[in-house]
Length: 84
Image (cartoon, rainbow, N blue to C red):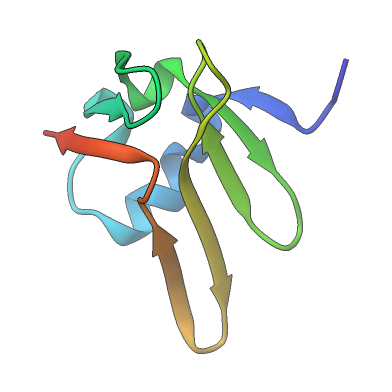
């Protein structure tokens, strides 16, 4: 098993620094398979260079997050919509 693979709740703190609401309770729709799930139900891969949140059903990259001294970089291309 890949020890970098965690459930979507692992990204709650990082996304909490970007958004002002509890992101793990937001619903994300996968752009590939159409699955709608709470962010906390997804799979998060956390590394030193960034975090990738993936659909638990089809493994599509939903959200990519990187942080450096210039700020946060958030890519939501894998999400059809994020409902909160």
